[in-house]
Length: 479
Ligand SMILES: *[C@@H]1O[C@H](CO)[C@@H](O)[C@H](O)[C@H]1NC(C)=O
Ligand SMILES: *[C@@H]1O[C@H](CO)[C@@H](O)[C@H](O)[C@H]1NC(C)=O
Ligand SMILES: *[C@@H]1O[C@H](CO)[C@@H](O)[C@H](O)[C@H]1NC(C)=O
Ligand SMILES: *[C@@H]1O[C@H](CO)[C@@H](O)[C@H](O)[C@H]1NC(C)=O
Ligand SMILES: *[C@@H]1O[C@H](CO)[C@@H](O)[C@H](O)[C@H]1NC(C)=O
Ligand SMILES: *[C@@H]1O[C@H](CO)[C@@H](O)[C@H](O)[C@H]1NC(C)=O
Ligand SMILES: *[C@@H]1O[C@H](CO)[C@@H](O)[C@H](O)[C@H]1NC(C)=O
Ligand SMILES: *[C@@H]1O[C@H](CO)[C@@H](O)[C@H](O)[C@H]1NC(C)=O
Ligand SMILES: *[C@@H]1O[C@H](CO)[C@@H](O)[C@H](O)[C@H]1NC(C)=O
Ligand SMILES: *[C@@H]1O[C@H](CO)[C@@H](O)[C@H](O)[C@H]1NC(C)=O
Image 1: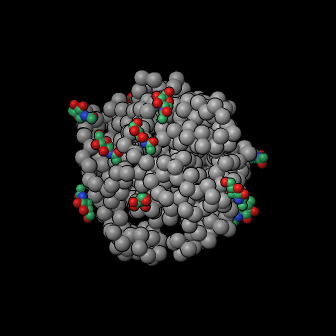
Image 2: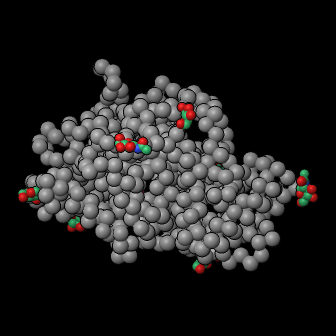
Image 3: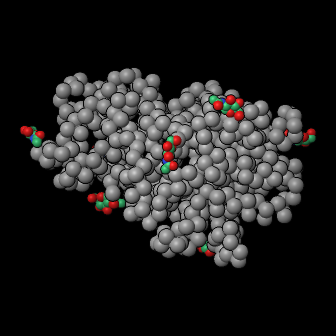
């Protein structure tokens, strides 16, 4: 089913070539380990599986006084997060911390049922945030035998940030505090406007590229909507968009729309000030570059011309490496990659995070979030119904965030002003024991990335807040 593509994975589609290849890599100064953990933490005598984690102890060995920094792995092979969370390692070197990056079950190579993990509903039913959090608690209990008494700081970005925040709520005896970066813990039914995400994407393009940029993109989608059900355009669309695939059905036209949509929404999330290789190899300031290309359009009434420039903008996302011969519409479609499958299952069951669009407050087209249609897709694909109220039951969800978080403590929620995932994130302090702020110029967990020369000032100062907050949680003072 095509509109599945509208499931915006928080950190992105891992079907992009090579990224989710579950190859064992060696990461300098980290040791790759396995631990046997129960497949079902909520049943006695459960069989176990091998969960992977990376650990680094050399900073700690210097003084044997530092904390444990524990990264709560999210929806991908754990190497992705080691590579894109350089600040955790950087701060560990200053605080003599042990660093642990734990892989989320059903991602990378931490497969409870090996290659059969995704094959039956029975094998899949242990894929949930509460089982993953229990894995992390299990691993920490094990590590604490060796490193007795060390305070633990949980970390995470995006869905990993949600897990870090929830970890502190559920296991306060294990963690002194959590750094939850770009963590949309309230992006659930009833507490989020489903259109807000795409509105923020559009606002980002407008702020960075000028209002002309979203205007051109919106025009392109209006033309595509007009051509979608008129087959006399299909052959030309193939030429105009230089697609690898033939355009022969309205679904194929819809694939073009989603190909563009994915490019622009992921560009908005990864608009970093330095070159990056998170979801894609990207230059610095990619939205600004894309809008530079898009706004070179001179005649908005000429749809072939509009398409040409909008496709150039999308190629800042898909083709920065310069290796694409033609535009492969299925490049970010979710099939065939474990990371995407796992996220699709999560978003169909426990993490149903509504996202829609209307083509008015955003630059896309009219396709509002449709819970019923989504439910039937999920039932058809996974044999599972969405658990719309899961987050509300397990972690709290209500229009009144202050109320939900009134008893929570020692969680730092950071967000970036450019990040569409501000939608559903915690942007204000709900009580004196929490910290929440938005960094101007920051994007999706910018602060967890390795410090670089042209980082926005508020990302730099945000990292200082992180350091001081951790010291305060551990020692009651800031040194
Ligand atoms: C690994 O550790 C060695 C020795 O401390 C150090 O020289 C090197 O820079 C480290 N490499 C990384 C990538 O941290
Ligand atoms: C971890 O366990 C898996 C599955 O049993 C195995 O293939 C892999 O070699 C193990 N890795 C390490 C580092 O022990
Ligand atoms: C992580 O970075 C290393 C270089 O340090 C690179 O070889 C590897 O491909 C990267 N892995 C991922 C999954 O990005
Ligand atoms: C979703 O939230 C709305 C508004 O709070 C509520 O009316 C609706 O019943 C919820 N949907 C489900 C499936 O619980
Ligand atoms: C399809 O587009 C052609 C122009 O390319 C137009 O002549 C025709 O009327 C359109 N058909 C419909 C059903 O709108
Ligand atoms: C994507 O499309 C190309 C060309 O049609 C095809 O060869 C390839 O197998 C497709 N990839 C996936 C993951 O579906
Ligand atoms: C996009 O803009 C950049 C910067 O102006 C330029 O170097 C590049 O050639 C343009 N890309 C295309 C495909 O036109
Ligand atoms: C990708 O970039 C290369 C190098 O700039 C260019 O030759 C190629 O035409 C681009 N591919 C597409 C599909 O635009
Ligand atoms: C939200 O909850 C807080 C804390 O319980 C309460 O003080 C406040 O009045 C509530 N706000 C609304 C609008 O209900
Ligand atoms: C906590 O205080 C102790 C004693 O003053 C000091 O050695 C240690 O470095 C401090 N730890 C942190 C994380 O600030």
